[in-house]
Image 1 (cartoon, rainbow, N blue to C red):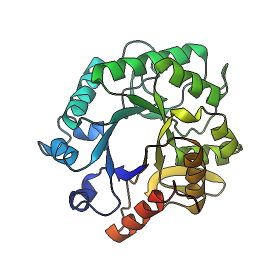
Image 2: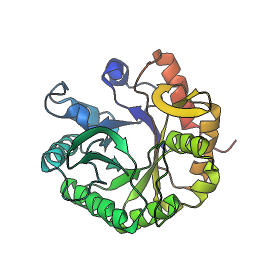
Image 3: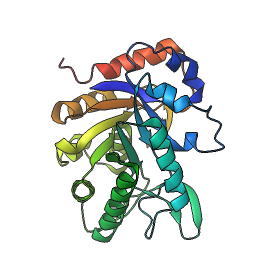
Image 4: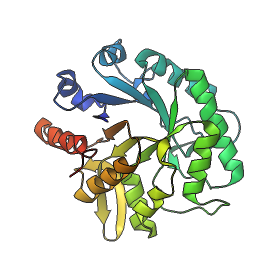
Length: 265
């Protein structure tokens, strides 16, 4: 299992030095769109040092109707430049007929939505010529539907012929906010679909858990990730730190923790 982190400009110099334990990088596609400020040729240079994965935020796979052609074109250009091992997007929608909402929103676990997301995922994979993974998100509400969330994800991966990017932190946060057992939830998934993990520390205000992508990884998240890795053929785990970046030594400690989750105690 490879260990790595999401590429962020604030960490560029440290990443360029190829620190111990960092074997792969996840590229957020939108950070490399025209006008985003990425230096020319940067993706090619990173591809020469690391295994890359390209992660999307705004393709809005859960929006009915055709995908946004301009967004898909830009995403595909990033994929072509990075030549990643795989690509990924969220089981969510970010766009409606009225406009861009600017954040990830949950989709109802219905059979109609199942087909919408599966068709869109297949289209993105075919356009980019890469395997696609789909990621679970956090949500402050649990939408009703015809299927349990895990049945929805299993069927979605089967219809789209894709893998699952299991966000450990998102799962843990949802389990605390909505009162369910995260391990029991994982055991309901088809394990062979779980290809990649995301992890970062959660935030908490009273009884409410949130994901600001800004905290060190708590031990219960490491234990949950270890349990998942013991059951599924996880190929990579990515540290998703977006804010309050610590000193490089602290990041190296976090990466070392991740490198050990696939090893038995």
